[in-house]
Amino acid sequence: MQAGGRDRPAASGRDFRRVVLRYALSGVAALILLGAAGVYLLQHVGRDEAIRNARENAELAGRGIVEPALTPALLRGDAAAIERVDRVVRRGILRSRIVRVKIWDASGRVVYSDEHRLIGSRYASGAAELHELGVGRTAAEVSDLSRPENRFERRFDKLLEVYLVIRGPHGAPLLFETYDRYSSVAASGRKLWLAFAPAILGTLALLWLVQLPLAWRGARQLREHQAQRELLLQRAIESSELERRRIARDLHDGAVQDLAGVSYNLTAAAQEMPNAEAAATLRDGAQATRRTIRELRSLLVDIYPPDLHRTGLGPALRDLVAPLGPRGIEASVDVPDHLTLRAELETLLYRCAQEALRNVAKHSGAGHVHVAVETNGDRARLVVTDDGRGFDGAAGDGHLGLRVLTDLAHEAGGELKLDSRPQAGTRVCIEAPL
Image (cartoon, rainbow, N blue to C red):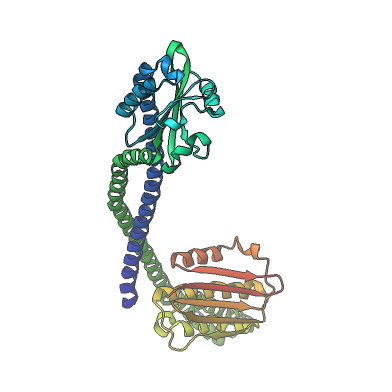
């Protein structure tokens, strides 16, 4: 018993640490998932913000730098006009991020590009984009470098193409395009989300760290409440056993002894009674009194088995099946030699056998019943099997005794199983931890 008592707090401590560790690991998993989702969203936000900045830069470049420098001579392809726009573009627009600038007219002709070999060429795509875009809008997309008009940009691998409509000489609409390095756009987006990521991840980590002590405290309180509940249950069981013992002692020392005296007196009076009819009546009374004494002694064994904790579970079970013989029920008991169980478990198994055998005697009509106790690893099992008439499994659901045993088994960390079919006997099995 003392060893079991030492093991229980150790096991409770392990369960407590396991619960807190499981909570901590689930918090880390949630932190990783939320962090990954946050980083993913920040990446998209950063990329979108970088593309928006690229559009704004293109608008400033097109309307604020290039548009004032456009002349009719540029539209005619004048070399001097192209040179003047070149200086404006190279000084104010072209840099490490923007690698190409193009200007198209409504016919799809390239009227200017910092790559002069494109000037004067016509492509239907330019006219289509100018027509579809409309005034006041700015569009951005990954450039299709497979198009012929983009053949000189293929060496840049991946570019972001930003285009908008500007006004040329005499208000003619022109399509202005810039080609940004996509790596620069991605880097700008990465820089943006990296600026926010530490704050978001740090907040999540701080939230996890704040919740961990709360979880530890909650688990500790739960463990204390569970320990208090187990202590109350243990005290209730002990009180019940003490009350059973007191009732059994009072019955044995009081009513049983008194009835025994009445039986002796009636027998003695019957022997001295000269009237045969009166003597027979006294003998019948003495016999009825002795029958009542036997019933009370059987009740005493049911209330408190005197041999259970003194001689062990095996002898107590053999005493329990002894009354079945006169009823015509052959009983056998199989309990391992030198079986040692804690007192609470012995009581639980005994009560289960007692209830099962009571049902066998009253309801089953069985000719044989077998009671077996076995241990398997860290669990003990009691099985009561009879060859009686059995019943439909659902019929046992409302049986009070079985419900009480089921609750006791659950409180002890075990379970009660009932297997019965009409005309196929009944098997009652209770299993609980050692």
